[in-house]
Amino acid sequence: MSFVPKFLISSRLRSAKKRLSADPSAANYLAVAAEHAKAGAMQEALEVCEEGCAAFPGEHELRRMADRLRAVQLEDRTRDLAREIKEAPRPALYRELCEILLATGRVARAEECAGEWFEKTKDPAALTSRARARLERFFSDRRREDGMTAWDFISQAMAAQPGDERPLRLALDLFSRTGAWADAFHVLGSLLQVRPGDPLLEARYRTLAGLAQRAPQFDAALRQVERSGELVEHKNVEASPASATAVRPALKEMGSEPGTRAALFTRGSTALVQGVRGATAERTARALREIVQNTRTTARRLGLGVPQEIELEGDFGFLTIAPGERGCVALWTEGRLDDARRLRLGALLGPRGARSRDASEWDADDLDTEVESEEIL
Image 1 (spheres, helix red, strand yellow):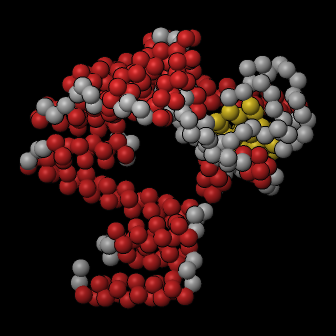
Image 2 (tube, one colour; image 1 turned 45 degrees about the horizontal axis):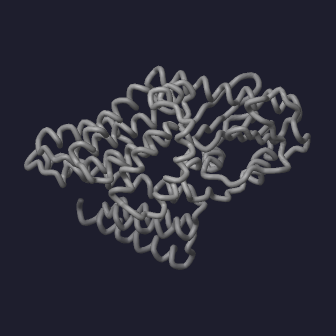
């Protein structure tokens, strides 16, 4: 870079910092971060974004820029690690590369990297990383074959590392999230031998003791997950309570915006509906559940992974659906949603507290029952 561009960038950066000092707004944080990025100072840019996110937690642009900067840094580190591994392969480099690949969602590449790691170094820790990668693939795609392969990999890791709690925790996660409580109970007993007296593990052990009495076999549990496309929620076995995020006010706000015909949220046996009433609300919620179920099944059969968003367009307008592990939220609107509303839609999928008492609700497993309340949210 010549002297003149460097000087201009430095001058713009100083000006941006002065504006930020005089007016610490989200836009000025973005401007300073952008100038740092243009100068190639990615770490400084990320630090400015993180400071801005702390000051303005609701600013999506700051969060998106911070995510992009982290991705750039991880990509650069990935290339560096690949080059170092080619020159002198060793476990520490493979371990870091596998962690980065898993963190960035490249689970297939992470599994390949872990396999190469074990082949080159015979490090038993590589077996745990390979098992973790295949487990993440199963959690993403919900394919029975991936679940069985993950268990095979976990078994190999446990045999190669007796007394290591990491593969045991992977096994516990696999069995718990598929509802194979008897197997989870057995693994938890082994884990307690590694960490005796752990109060959280002991509490979970007592919980699983009851669930194990009526648990399906692991293969049957896998088939159910593949058929339904849904994992068992952690709330069944975790001691920590869910967040008290309020769904009802947010749903009401989104449903009352111009051009919105209905806003819906479903989770388990509860359905909250804003904008339509009675039998229409019941049919709409039933249809929403069927759309999500069929889409997940089709995506799984085609090997596409788990749908992050579903959009239907027609004479009726647009139906935008955000499915998640903890529920499903949808907006029926006259026009296509902009980025800001899409982000708000997805934000409702975080952990939630108790269900609303004064919403239109019904048992989703028995939708022929009468709606409890005609009151719109």
